[in-house]
Amino acid sequence: MLGFFLRNVVYSSSGLPWRGCGRPMVLPGAGSPGCGVIPSAGTIPATMLTYPHIDPVALQIGPLAVHWYGLTYLAAFGLFMLLGIRRLRHPPFASITGPGAWTRKDVEDILFLGVAGVVIGGRLGYCLFYKPGYYLSHPLEIFAVWQGGMAFHGGLLGVVVSMLWFAHSRRRPWLQVADFVAPCVPTGLAAGRVGNFINGELWGRFASPDLPWGMVFAHSGSMQPRHPSQVYQFLMEGLLLFILLWLYARKERRPGQVAAAFLFGYGVFRFIAEYFREPDAFLGILSLGMSMGQWLCVPMIVGGAAMWLWAQRQPVGALVSR
Image (cartoon, rainbow, N blue to C red):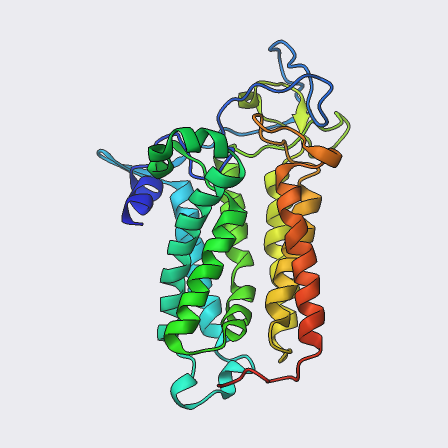
């Protein structure tokens, strides 16, 4: 985990950790949804928005370079701590006393375990979900995180495992831990999307030239305007999901309902955003006209809805202590 931090905050090169990585890619033929033939290079109309080519290095001190992307990670961690401390005041956590009482130390431990879960799960998820054949043939490259390649859905599974470990070690109900963590996550996702935009990665599909906010990402290999999908995801999966979930979680809910709301809400917002986001060049559009990201969201949506309905049958406060 220390190597991951140094690579992305201090020594990070042009390769980036999350899939997409901002590298120029070869687009599929015009028959693929959201893709088209790359036109020859030309001038961009003055009225059209263009990606500003932000320097990924925020601060250079001799051989050390502090990258914006790494700073967004730090912002995500800081926001989690801030919100986690505020969450201690929410019911039912504020009313729990004795050995099961929640403290600031719990928030710090959850953050540490969560970071480990994100890094390990995100990397393994990318290898298994997106390039299983390649990494099966080159297993040692699974550890080559400096080459880029992380997946949110894998990171989510990693966080689930880390929270299971935390709940077991502290003898707390796992659903209680999940409900505590869920509202503190979306701001971190929003920070990550800011990093995606600064790095000019994970650009959107082609947009109509009439779209006022359509943006040209020249390094994508095309001079046609695209949807700024990073901004869409920042607004939906980050800010909007945070506002809805934080307001929902301020009142005591049945065990598991807050976590279920996160699963369902993220799954829906990400599924919608994928219609505007350029699919991975090596995967393209899969069956039923859906991207890999959308297929991975389906179990989140179904599971979140099923979990919420199950929780609805449980009494309020059933898992306050055990």
